[in-house]
Figure 1 (cartoon, helix red, strand yellow):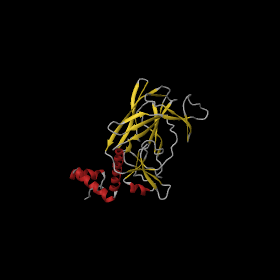
Figure 2 (tube, helix red, strand yellow):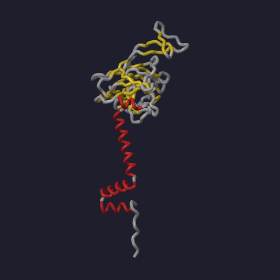
Figure 3 (cartoon, one colour):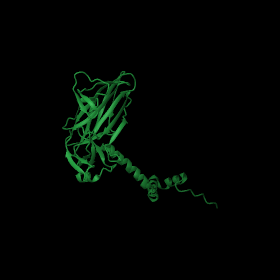
Figure 4 (tube, one colour):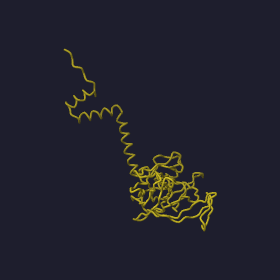
Length: 300
């Protein structure tokens, strides 16, 4: 008598037999046990853990420190403009402590002093200065009709914001805006700016000139929305958080636009996540000194 050919385990025929005999639930349990036995479960578990961790980070907002522990700077990061006829990029910097300065959120002063500026991908970056540039995609004008500040106020976090002292020159950003996250009503208001006078260019008549690290400059009055851009005319904006009280705040800015009968909105945010500013105390440490010198400071 010829014996029937045995089916290999986990072959299609073997699977059909097992389902008929024991049902899908039993088969799934066996599959999981097999993965554990072969160590594959560890890989699956790590993948799932990584996905969960990434999701939590997106919900938490903020960004990660760089590898060197230096001032974090994102240069020319593209923004998803949701089909708007324009291009948008932003950059975030811890340099120049305008408003609520950027730094790394540490659990306490002891941990901050011991960090050593070696960099740690698990330390979130908060605060800082946000600049973004909007430029039309064609000669057709795009009107930037308004900007709306969207804030998610969360309970304050325990800890300190660790930062290094920096050197700041004159503000050369064309369109500065001040953000205030204090109280129940968050605001984003146009602020006075400064413009550097470049060689060979005459300043407007009657303006007062000041000396700065980048050359002579003059103050400019606040200019609020709307603005108009084309592919030959761009606008650069700067967002500085001037105050935040009793809040671990997540925020982004929604820009409304109109062009050639079309309208829409898009968000200025941090890689699809909100920016994050916290009211935790600011501990400024200078790692160039030995021992490291630290002192608390107030935003300005």
